[in-house]
Length: 272
Length: 150
Image (tube, rainbow over all chains, first blue to last red; front, side, top):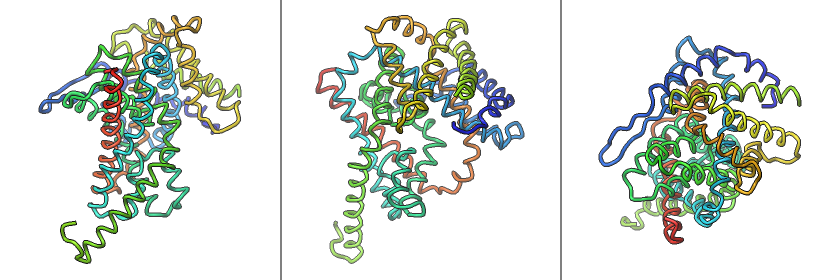
């Protein structure tokens, strides 16, 4: 946001006009819910807005310059989202303090990433890339940490960049879809999913909690406050969590798995 | 500083217009009902952006903005009733739609990187997002139940 060209971006009226039209069209279409087995997948205007925006990039309507101009705007747009979350947290402060222990400890849930995804990455044949890929959800602070520790050209950095790119392109849409589906198919409480929506990325949080709000409209205020508080907590603590717990644990598990794999290849214990 | 201030306000104003229209078409809130809330949100954002510039250290603007938003909406803070009442007219979904529209447009330029990823990377990345989400939800469920909140 430091750059002086923000002024030029403000004047890029074609970009703003395209966005305004996308917003009007997608909000006018409204939400759709369709059943998948016992669950519901919710399609929200923000999901179509993202897909239409992406599709328009490949048409003459959107130039490379406009796409470049859009980038710094997202950072400013997210501040409005955070402001809205802030004013939703205030009135719920008592409920949030009461739920404080759960909010703090569910950060440990990010370790779920390591236990789910690391074995899969190793199974798929990734080597040290898998450490970068699975030590965290791979947002900006985590990319910084891995590049800082292993160097930009390292296998670990390639891994974290892969997750970063996927998360940037499809993270919000993906979390929006699975949040609705999981909240309607599993017996877990909507507030647990609201807390889980705060993964440390504003757009992912908005998409995931947005789906929950549509599925449970009567709990809107609580969902926004819990998701928002959890997201602010993740933003504040996520990096330290990765440094002191996530990354060491991933490296330890990785070397355990690799030793086992090597033993297996040597024919030590075929049942291991 | 003044230059930044006008630029921020202009950009946030553009988002505000988009959100007001989306809020109207999608959530049936007339624009003039939503505008006071949008102005409050823009003021909170701008205040946070100013603090980021003024206060030394590495705290990003969103940190200040979150804290200001919480403070001005606490039940015992004078005037918070109005702030909560006005901002409640602005749907969080209506704020997210323009952001994702800009994101979709800008991500087109990352498309080449994305295509290089390969299916194996995509499978792992999906499991990373899924693992974090379900892991956090499971722990939250256990503790909220144990506390008797749900």
